[in-house]
Image 1 (tube, rainbow, N blue to C red):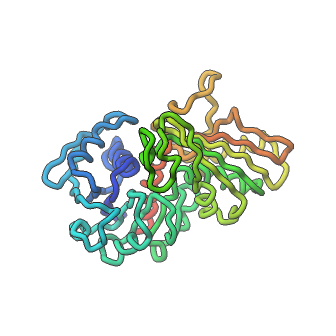
Image 2 (image 1 turned 90 degrees about the horizontal axis):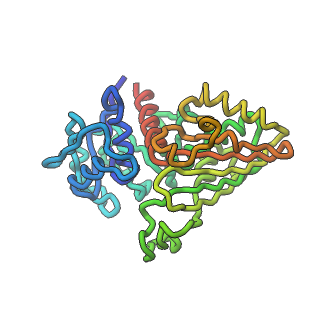
Length: 351
């Protein structure tokens, strides 16, 4: 199998999380990461990789010098450039072109489809995997559900969906396949993100995100319903969603209330989730039963790699058609692992 040459543009929480997940393997790196790029100086990237306030220090060593970051024993080219402002013919992209990359993971969160197609058209890379569902992508992949639809001849700009999309889609897939969903209301309770303010101040797009993030629960729109329908188009128009940003560091929760298409029971739904968690969606969906008769709390799922952890104690069926589901997931670690799974799907199809 071809060992693809992979680059990462954007080394915020997601970009660094992908690096960590890639090099945390006991047997060494999972994929051949050959290039890193961000607006930050290389010493700050190295510092943030080595000292993580959420996950602690990584198991691998880090160093940097003269345009390279050394992770463990591997020396990786670092190209500094501002993806938010640079046009594609900027010198930073000329440097990336020299590295003969097969796949670039764009984790900037700011790139447009024209930027990503430009990376391919200018032969900087052959494929782009985006860590968001932006307009114009060729396919959105939620690993475990639809990676088999990836066609290397047609799909060049690929989205790895979103963290909440990866949590909701497998659950919706199970329900819709076996019972059917007429309507669902999705509420996500999401930890504060880096675009929020530590103290009240200006926010460039959403005023309430300019409020002190540690002092309030902040309601805001979320694309989890759209992300789900993008992978499961039969659910288009059947889903609504809202998010509440809360003053926690990590692990997102999701509360789903669904009207299903036929009569069901708690026993049937529980059995379905258990079956998929042990077979088809093993390591993607997990059924949480608690510990010694007690429920766990969100921080207990720090570092877990499941896309969706279903809290079985709170699985409810009312009047045979109303279903309540509570889900938790490490919105960084689990998502970064799924991005690498999408890389695996691309590499597998490459031959």
